[in-house]
Length: 112
Length: 116
Image 1 (cartoon, rainbow over the protein chains, first blue to last red):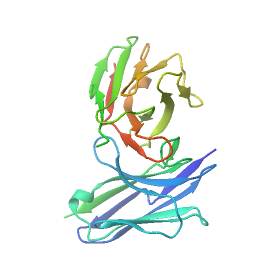
Image 2: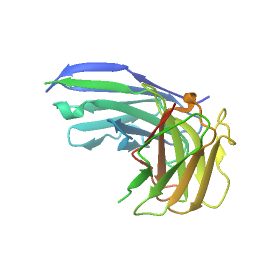
Image 3: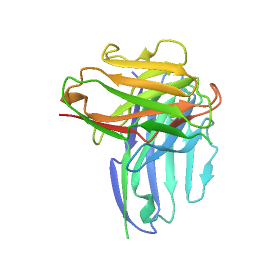
Image 4: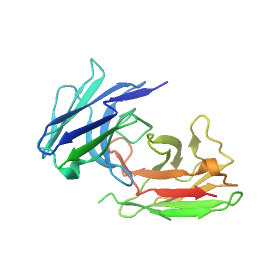
């Protein structure tokens, strides 16, 4: 059975801190690892990673995939209160358009 | 681009009634749509994969006679929860892909169902 595990389950930091969120996966026929941010409603897409060692960056967020260790991290630098959300990672068997197996998420809270 | 809408955004119904939730891709055609369910403080669990013009593929443990899925066009998929019970209360989210093989899933805003 496919499995995605995220850690920590929750994290509380002060504004301005840097955080690293972890995601490990066991997905049959793995092709892609996706990160989503979920606030009150449905998840919004952050990154899709398909190649090992190539960092993807968007503003203060960055992510990288290690296909040998079956692991990905999401970094957020200079955190802001608007970064407070649940961050979900998901393993996919295609480029995110087939079945996604989601982790339980990391609930990030940024204290002003 | 890649906007997905859901209707209604929330619904409250009595036990035993049926509820229909619509998922629309507003600015693209989606040959594949997905339906997820999310219980409080849990992650998204895939219920079924819906392909336009064919029967949906249900995940293990999801009753296809209870959760009816219709993908009648390239921009619309519907999920009908039949004979709803309080344990069906959940957050139902759909997603859609623009182009098979090259693109990720874009999620709708979700529908919160409460069955009394």
